[in-house]
Image (cartoon, rainbow, N blue to C red; front, side, top):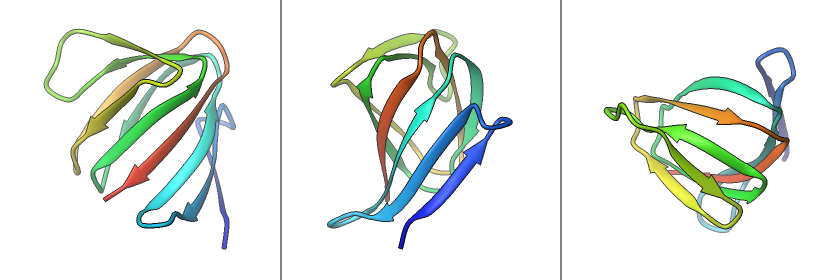
Amino acid sequence: MLNVNEYFDGKVKSIGFQGESLPATVGVISPGEYEFGTSKKEVMTVVSGALTVQLPGSESWARFAAGDAFEVEANTSFKVKADMDTAYFCTYE
């Protein structure tokens, strides 16, 4: 079963599904700055484009390009900036 999700007035869209071993989403983030909350540990991989990310507890921003991944612990929030449409794949533990 696929679950379609839409956030920030349609500027972020994802499709959720049960992956081989973990729940997952694939989606696209339109240009802009966003803050996401987590309820589970997330591992996000940039598929196309790039994201600049401020991870929980950090004051600095880091850039993640296609092929790069980052982890975010459960019950936190993180900020992302996208300068172009950016595709991602995310798993949830």
